[in-house]
Image (cartoon, rainbow, N blue to C red):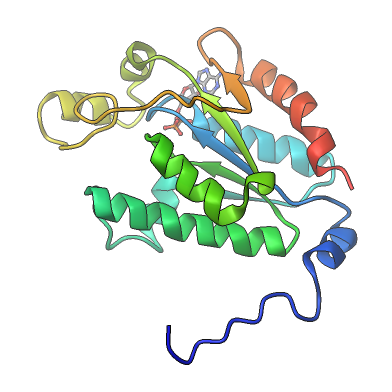
Amino acid sequence: MNNIHPTFQKLITREKKEGKLKQRAKVFWFTGLSGAGKTTLAEALERKLFDLGYLTQILDGDIIRSGLNNKLSFTKNDREENIRRIAEINKLFINCGVITLCAFVSPTERTRHIVKDIVGADNFFEIFVSTPLEVCEHRDVKGLYAKARAGLIPNFTGINSPFEIPKNADFTIDTTVETVDECISKLTTKIVHLINY
Ligand code: ADP
């Protein structure tokens, strides 16, 4: 850290940027098993919020892992580094007044706490996509459950790596009982006052 002198937001503050965008920044964090519906819901929510006039940015596990974090593996250390970097990216968006919609398995309470600590509890809204393992495995959108069952993917969440149910989720969605439209409608009602300017 020698010779590094970060000067955050000296001239144009987050508040000024939020004023320009006429919105409040917030991190909406979707957690849940692979195939639970995180990406689908984040994308649908983005469309909805865009139509309502909000500026958002989606941050998605697969996209970040294939770009910025493509040298990181799924070991404990690399998972933590992955999540730390994602949290730091979120901080930049927040300071720019932009709402983020984040779709990451983030399987442990510790992982989610790391994000919450870095971005700040006030900026963080946790959405648990609680779709059960059987449903996710049946969907097997990316064919990963079949591979994991065949022993081809070590540390695959839900199969040979645990998923800890969030204890403090701000909102829970079970995609087995509601359509995407129903989920988004409920979620929008729940969050819109948090981002209204
Ligand atoms: P994840 O990002 O959690 O890995 P995806 O969004 O990639 O999950 O995949 C979820 C799958 O479940 C998609 O094929 C989607 O069409 C389907 N699905 C069915 N009902 C819902 C729902 N109510 N909400 C979200 N996804 C749903």
